[in-house]
Length: 410
Image 1 (spheres, rainbow, N blue to C red):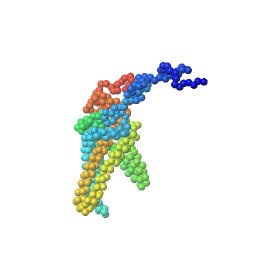
Image 2: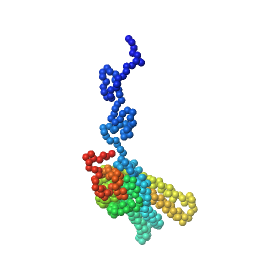
Image 3: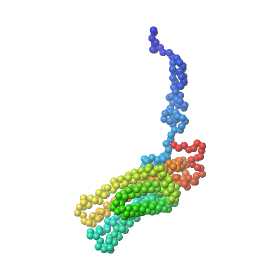
Image 4: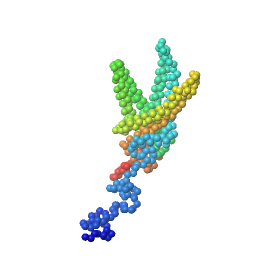
């Protein structure tokens, strides 16, 4: 039997197109596959990573634009944090300057009250011998305590107002529109009184809440005596949980009052609606941001606290009373300045986070990202506040357009 010559191979005929079944007994002949719109050796289509058009005729995914501090879509936690930093960086004079003014006023008043309490005389060791002596001592104490409480309440009111005002540069930064200090207050001028009303209502509600808790604690201690102390711990925990829940539900009310031009009660209802089904997420972000700001502030203040306690003993161990007093005043002033600066930065950052949470909630519930895209494409109302009802009502064409296919959401 003769062996086949390996060098003498039969010639192959024309190759059938890709996908055809070869005839039985014939040599299988494979050709190059031909995909629609793409052939072997042709340049790769840049619209699709694998070359050629996307499968099933679907459009290729395009990421939402990011013209400003955040992308125009619902936000993640990291994007909220980065957007808050970017807002302060791009509007440093507006954000930091406004927060610095408020923190300087409240910080100076707090320092004056604290120094007033330090200058008070010590109570006598044997107790008060007369009612007049007791009143001479307790009167300034009660006055200083009331002053500190008043300053705390003033801080709460100013912070609520400023939180609403500072939501304007955050909203404008989403479209990369810088906001000046004067421009921010000009845009917020019509919303000052609603914000004052909200701050007053918040103040009255906080006082009423703590008054009820105090009365309940007093009644428990009066009725049960020492055993009532066992009930104070769950009462305090329940009060803290209730306060945190209400605070989180009303967190975005100042931004809603300013951006959407709502009244006091309408802003409260709006915040209550927006935060529904998002309470835990909002509470976690707010708690983490407050923890970060508190830790950074404490770390910065630690060297000043150590210096105030040991500078005299190290550099002037035999200093007189006047020198010790002068050193204490200088350190108090330095500590006040540093504390005001740190508090201003922390407040601006927390306010930016709260405003971005508000924008994220509106993107998720109201399609604010679509409206911001429209403003980005048309350039409408460049000196206004994105998301205000006035700007939406001014346009004649609805958005998104009411078409049969709808508007694609990326």
